[in-house]
Image (tube, rainbow, N blue to C red):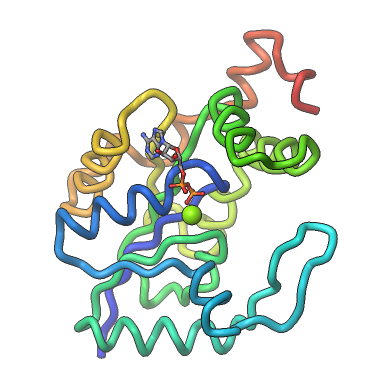
Length: 192
Ligand SMILES: Nc1ncnc2c1ncn2[C@@H]1O[C@H](COP(=O)(O)OP(=O)(O)O)[C@@H](O)[C@H]1O
Ligand SMILES: [Mg+2]
């Protein structure tokens, strides 16, 4: 079966789970959280003690995604931090959610995370790690970015929907550059 997966990636707190849910309701396409799959089905090979996170068993995770996607008729929205494990041939589009470091810090603090864990994730967001990884995995022409900083979840979901529907030219990578923005504001040192 030919798969057409929509990958939703992004630093924790950028809104993947929230947007996946809304998108799924709007399109009728089923969604799955890779993080939950790893946890609920025991698809891990170990624990990253330092980060307190599970190390995914990539082969079993990919098989499970295949199974679920086939079950769903070939289309599936997959969200999560492990998103770039999905084979390129299965992916129709990858949407990376981005959030301004100040707002992301606020959202992660709300989760009660430690300062060091927040800092590590906000730094990754500033450097655009998820975008970089998505481009590495799928090629830049398949990757789009949606800024969730000062929009409502439904507003951001609408932008993602625009991308899925084929009108995503203005969401191509290259517009969002927190590094440059923070430098201009003289705020970069606050985060490193
Ligand atoms: N435009 C937006 N898009 C998505 N989430 C948003 C937006 N604005 C605020 N939020 C909030 O940010 C949080 C994102 O959390 P979540 O969806 O769990 O992110 P992730 O799955 O990427 O870790 C939620 O509390 C959500 O309500
Ligand atoms: Mg989530």
